[in-house]
Image 1: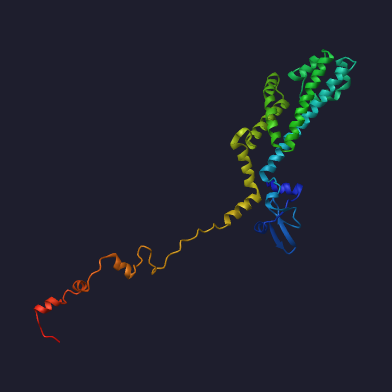
Image 2 (image 1 turned 90 degrees about the vertical axis):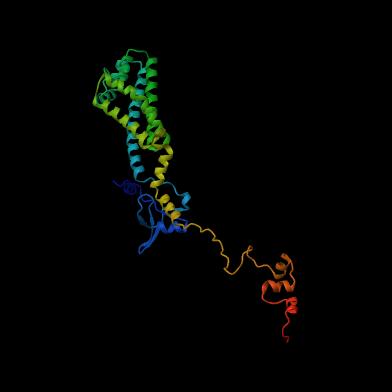
Length: 315
């Protein structure tokens, strides 16, 4: 089941026209009927003006597939909590009226709350076998002060259920923690109550509470389970169409090339191989006489002394 399509069918599409040009090309397209914009929930291109415009950083987060399914489940639990709150609120009102009534408690019970008594019996609550409602049965012989205390306790439990249901219905993180803790506190009592008598309603109520706690801890990653809040938020970001497109744009951008080292021309001598000027080369060594230079460079050429000892024809 595609929960994104169900969400758009129930609440309408959430189309987006970003200000960024590169991102705008990915979320908009031109058709013969007009410009269509992409829905942030179901990814469908919808013809008409966009629902949201502006920079990508200002777009509200839109719940998608898994988060929509989770919202549906949590709101079912919220409705069940509201029903419990209404039941105990009615019980608190009845007990309070008993405490201030001039009639006896049994007469008030028979006269004032026949509908509530019938409802309790239909729900499977038996005053003779329930530990909690057994206190009410014993309270028929108690004074008005005790009845007032029981009324306050029932009202407090009703408020607890209403707060729990509100947090779940609004899909708040604090509501999930509140529901997990409040439900866990009453599970031991429900187990104890099942030891007195097993009824279908009690078993169902117990299973619903256990399922709620397990679901909240595992699916919502409460109390650090499965990576905790950071892992849960990372999962939500991975499902976001906007975040996916931003990551794709970042991956498509080419990396900035590093400046290449400029090669020297082949005929340009380096500083170590630069030719020395002629005058520097002569200054570097001892200056030789022309005769010595001749003897060295041309050993076969006779000197003046050799020419005197070996006279020959002169030109």
